[in-house]
Length: 99
Image (cartoon, rainbow, N blue to C red; front, side, top):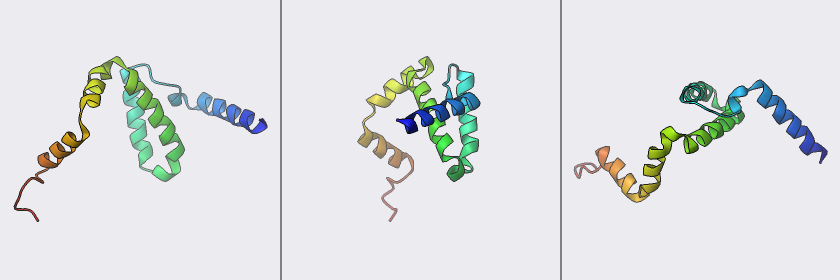
């Protein structure tokens, strides 16, 4: 139980220092988080923990924000097999002359 309390206190300290993990409430904040995430990816191994945490913040926003409602509806309606085939065809892999 003591370990849980210590971890909880550490998490609170991290959130106090890294406001970017407290959530996203606007398109502008969303864009800033995406740019920041892109920068973090340059040093993936060193930034893995923050990349995962920030990715979750971004995903939560994108799952619930009004600006993504139509996109999310289209995504859930896509049949994966059809989408995969379409991508392959768009990439020119439907050319029968290729080996």
